[in-house]
Image 1 (spheres, protein in one colour):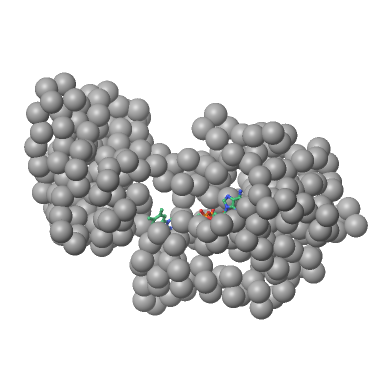
Image 2 (cartoon, rainbow, N blue to C red):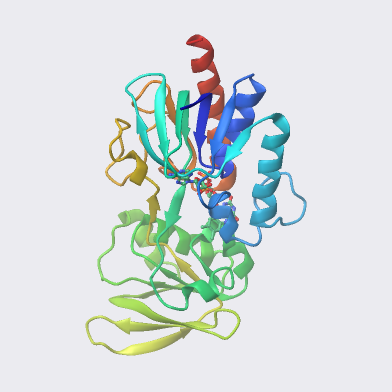
Length: 308
Ligand SMILES: Cc1cc2nc3c(=O)[nH]c(=O)nc-3n(C[C@H](O)[C@H](O)[C@H](O)COP(=O)(O)OP(=O)(O)OC[C@H]3O[C@@H](n4cnc5c(N)ncnc54)[C@H](O)[C@@H]3O)c2cc1C
């Protein structure tokens, strides 16, 4: 069994920021980064809204800088994938896929979330080339262009209003004619002359050679198909928190699988904290995940110092 004071699970912005704050508070910190260290930022080529960079920075470059900063400060990284957290109180036992077991006085869960995609065969090809799961992140690159957005909940509706501010046309594609968004937002969308509702319809093909040039949709009632030209296709059908490893733990989850954490990142188990997209009810952005990670690092360091 490997002993550490703090084990951070996840090496995205939340995990890295948590580790930076903890290690600078004198805490022995190990980050279990998982098989794909870096998280969701690796899926995006340009980030323009992370404060501190005059020019856009690549997702890989940003997360690589975070990893290097952590290492310079003395954080230890492993590529272990955590499969189980056990214990009702400190110290906790954390088991990894390769069989390695850690004993940690405190644990920070920073395992992010995965965007849900449509499952179309062309998706991999067009990710970052007009296809995105984040309008807040990539919408700005579509200014002056026509875009489509898929979804029927608050995110899709709010994203449609956001995109309509600078896109020439927004087609909101939804598989039903009833929505899960709140009525005020639905009314705003319906009254926005730039937004067209494409209802009872599902995307069946993304069109384009190098970049997205359009989407073919099928009406689920009539089976009729049509092509909608667009330069951007935004998928807003939800995210799935990474939670498989928590299924036998005592850390409470919300109905939709988010880790329940307080404003100060405390979970339902004293000594286990959660930060970033795995616990984020509203904002799923790198800078917000980093901020939450900082809070978790401060809280975990205080917890460890109290229990030394
Ligand atoms: C296509 C796309 C574009 C985006 N563009 C932007 C943008 O321009 N600006 C912006 O601010 N945000 C952007 N985002 C959102 C941003 O990437 C996320 O909000 C942010 O990465 C969340 O950080 P996180 O640390 O909570 O999780 P993540 O970045 O998802 O990191 C989670 C980490 O946990 C690890 N992990 C998961 N499970 C385990 C396990 N069991 N054991 C060990 N490790 C595990 C993963 O390997 C990963 O290292 C974008 C997201 C996507 C999908």
